[in-house]
Length: 223
Ligand code: DX5
Ligand code: ZN
Image (cartoon, rainbow, N blue to C red; front, top):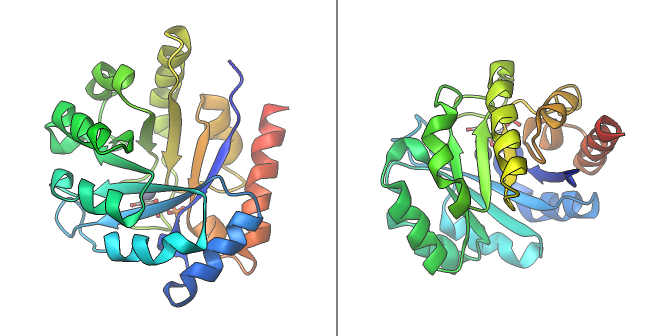
């Protein structure tokens, strides 16, 4: 089934001093989701932002706030993210307790995502596909923006797309890490339809134009 691609700029690469303005700019460029990379210094060797930042940015955008929880204990924070204005939270399958986390997020009224690191096999997420709204297949090892795209993950994206389509699941397949105008055609071809991009949007002189360029690249990849 033909999918409509969604562009999800990651504010991790934004200028933290003017995040509100930056979000407004990418919203004008037609960003569909705003991606928040939440790092706990434990699941990944870095710390970033948490619920207070999400809350302070909520008035700046009506777009879907897509919170990617790179945390060892995401269950402790789901409610705080919901209260801060998150629309969806994505937890990593590697932390375990997945079925419970999905239930908890769902009962809070969040859209539910499940993420897998580049070296986590498709079999680890396959049992949950019917219970989630979004599958995030990392195309870098999480923890830092600006890393190089890992093309080997495309086999898994392909596998996920086949499974989703053959079972007619209403599930987005998101990729995250090293996404730019050069890699967009590769991920779209493999079957992803939600494209997270940090550096390729916010490290460019004009984030609005950069977000638009990703949209154009996705469109031409489908043409
Ligand atoms: C990696 C994060 C990504 C990252 C993407 O830990 O999950 O969302 O910010 O950044 P770029 O697009 O710069 O690779
Ligand atoms: Zn992310």
